[in-house]
Image: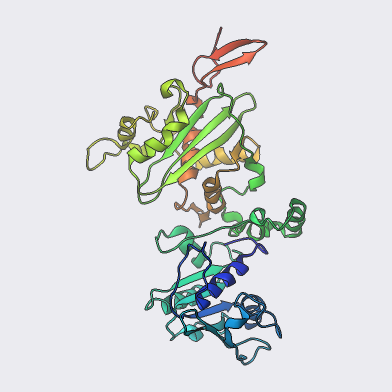
Length: 428
């Protein structure tokens, strides 16, 4: 799921060629077949299949053998009916001694044309309709085959995209690529390309982010909130935020607060599923190194930490305290007993983003993945892949307890913040 013109179809063609020929490079870590395979490759129309998929596999019309399938491996490529220069299928020599077959398909003929055959693989170039995706997947069930897609998500949070992004499965994965990952462009060329897109399409076409329109929780461009990592002065107040999880990931963030400018920086992010509190605590303890044995570094946490673990009978929050993490003594909530409202916390984050008072270190890839896809459905926030967003919200709700650690230089002298970000000082 990637930006336009960054090489996603090229990558799909390279993989299809490997499976058809059995010619895998030494560095290939993906799936391998040691026998001939049968596959389907498809685009939206017959013309688009010819101009993209077929061109990269075979080469252009009259130039067959200049694509990813080596010319010496091409046995036959008879023409299809109805679309000029489109082939019906390609017969390919496999290193095992047999021949593989790959057929050219399209979505425009409907689901019925996708029934019947048993396949080893299907490659969809551009996102298929959900019924055709399901049929393609069904074709590979008997062979324990595989399906891959290469597309720019211009259809938004469609049924197919939501299956990959929202439904958890060890059998599915998503690789995202933005125009910034395409090193064959200069920065000047990237800027010019992005400027040429319609504003509402820029994030999809340049970053591979599904178009969500008004459905996005944070309708803010990444550029508004991104900053390069930098050393955090150790007198700045800091705070952690935790979102508990097992089936859905456990997540944590660390925030640093420049009180003078009223800017919050997200400096660290951690997300992992199906791991124990011992594992999480070991990973997060490094965030509080140098903080007087952690005495000034607290984590904000949600009210579900008050629930009791079925095995030990302890509160979930206490289990993490026992592993050495300093969770604040009460769960995250607004001051003056104003509750824990999700929408109020979202509004607080959004206001900071729009005003330039919430910044995120550019190397926090997983944080930005969630930010891009955090959206509403029928007005309600979709509670999937929102773990780092929630951890950030808890920490910002409790920013008032963030504490600094070391001396701050002022006029060649030093003074120490005595407690929290409320501004109390002792002069030394």
